[in-house]
Length: 119
Length: 110
Image 1 (cartoon, each protein chain N blue to C red):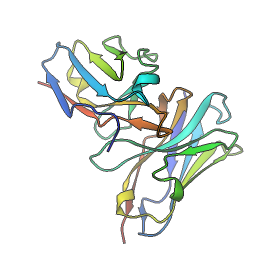
Image 2: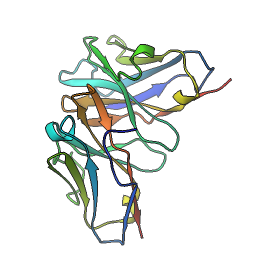
Image 3: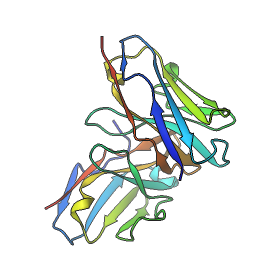
Image 4: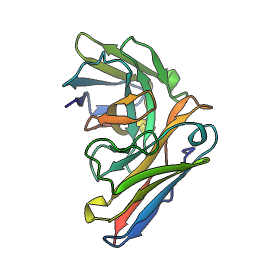
């Protein structure tokens, strides 16, 4: 069974950089026809797609965040990562990593990690 | 604010049926597959329906999905207390070039 696990700091200072890693186990990140994504959920609010990456490195991002976001993949470690620059309190959220198919169905999710932006 | 609109809440007694609507447009639901997710308190979302009306392995047939025009619907029959959760629809929006999710619906079992 495929498993995803987020890791990274739970606290980030305003104007700093949020950095998270998603470790994939039980399967290869180089599997064809699947993309690896980051999704976030502010406390008490809905889901927001941040961006997705294919194992080849091709990425696509939510245009509302694109200028501040970088998603990268490390196939040797079976991991992918997220960086969000210039964070503010509005970036406080539970961040999930997930795998989706070509039709946007998110079948596998990490447990999520809460990142709080605070001084 | 999301481009997919869902009712904030629905409720019904155990054993009854509920339906959750997801209203969008031709740039999203109207021309793309829809998926549905169940999010129990404090947990990650779980895929219930993919490609509009298909159920992943292990999802009971009490859950069903359909689409008509620019709206999609999730149906839950034989409602159980364990179904109390938030439910989200999701799809691709061709105008935004983005994956989008609905506003979410809280299901309460009376």
